[in-house]
Image 1 (tube, rainbow, N blue to C red):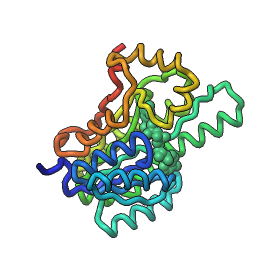
Image 2 (image 1 turned 90 degrees about the vertical axis):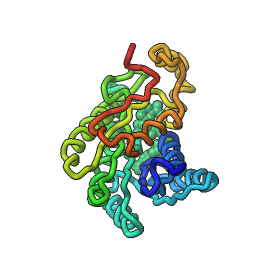
Image 3 (image 1 turned 45 degrees about the vertical axis):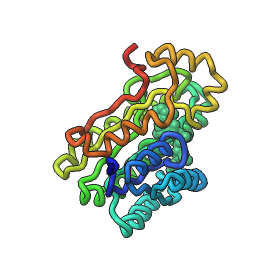
Image 4 (image 1 turned 120 degrees about the vertical axis):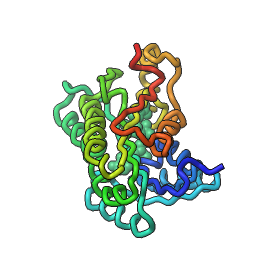
Length: 255
Ligand code: NAI
């Protein structure tokens, strides 16, 4: 049976770990050729290994999404081998210092988080825009529960701000690019067990318990829990879906 993404070329930022790695594997399983874009080339190579071991096709480019010129260069290099039709803006970081913390550290967190989570998404999207318009492509942005609320376990204002921004960017682009046949959607993961929160989970078991009391499905998520919605949003199954956010959060926002 043909995969849902047969014939597609997908670029996934932050594809060398966690949620991005899970999405890369799922896209390859569905027949897409996957390009892993990550600042951590070792992680990207790990993803390629997993995909190739399963019979899929993947390559990688080391990319810092905060470097606008490097994003343009990567897009040009990829375009010479075939235009992408799927872009997943997934690269992200978090730090959990309160706004009342040491001023210089909080300002540094603000700059780093906004430049990766938000400016990075802009840089990569703009770099691939021509290719996505030419292929009537699909963009999937990774938001969060914190695209809507601030989850204090603890967390930073910068992260919540960046993820609210992801939702705004998703809606604005969906509105602008619909006429080109480009669909733009987001996914809002709940607590997914990855490196981004490994230390916080280990240090703060009572906070994990708090999040679980808020999670009707009663367990943290895995990267595979995000891969399904990501395949749906990249495939023709979601042909009439744009400007939406699919929450994959175990039901967090119902309570
Ligand atoms: P992760 O830490 O496992 O993966 C993040 C990836 O982004 C890494 O491979 C890292 O090398 C890459 N990256 C970081 N800075 C980069 C840069 N400047 N340029 C290119 N790549 C860069 O974390 P996870 O959980 O897989 O995070 C993926 C996305 O999911 C992030 O946007 C995160 O905010 C979001 N998210 C995660 C949740 C969770 O509970 N794990 C919940 C909601 C959203």
